[in-house]
Image 1 (cartoon, rainbow, N blue to C red):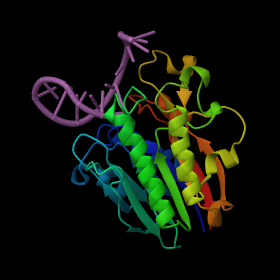
Image 2 (image 1 turned 45 degrees about the horizontal axis):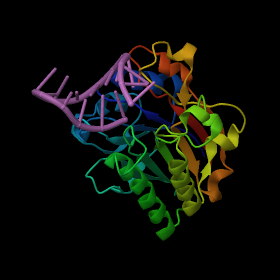
Image 3 (image 1 turned 135 degrees about the horizontal axis):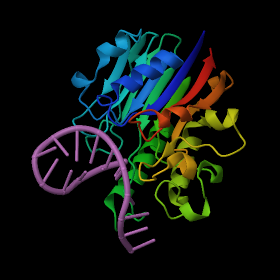
Image 4 (image 1 turned 180 degrees about the vertical axis):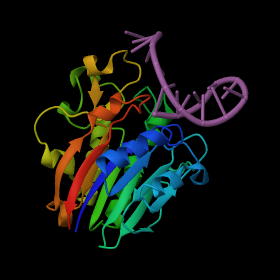
Length: 262
DNA sequence: ATGGTTGAAAGTCAA
């Protein structure tokens, strides 16, 4: 069985229902993981996606903030969620496919503007969230698992438009990268996007604050697809649909894709 | 060090 999976921080699924439908229609991923739905589950426009063949959905929502959903053409079973930060945020949900693969859809806290937990509680919450995810992987080593989402960290020098100028910018500070790497080691996670595309700059997010995002191209790779070693060799065909960042009234994130032959 | 833009929701807060 082969399936294609995509992950996309949609920044309001209700406002951008038409963009989600466009992605589902044009790209036809078997599974689409959304973050920042900014909606309770009962107000997510799931009927529109069902009409396009996405009959299964596992989601967690809340009013105004956060919110994650896994839309699928393939049967899914809800496999639970974790509130890693104990903040009552809907930032994680997981689902199991019939082939025994578990998908974890994550939205790691952005962490505020100041990269210092003494001055900025949000930064501490981000680091603590990653530590709790690490401990969860240590306690329960994931198998046949895929972890996707907006991890809000661009770990590599070629995951940002300028490594040196971003070293003190939240999303690319060494302490965040250390926390992300500790999580990867704890679960033996492999970065599927970089397995497939090891060379060159890759971005999945361009700020709304840049007047000409495409010409400036000051991007960061914040959105990731990881897999455990037992299935990573099944992964191929990674890509980032940069064009979606240029759609009308876009999300500031572009969708990231990978295909698995399992 | 600051500003720039966007979304939800009706204040600002979060990103």
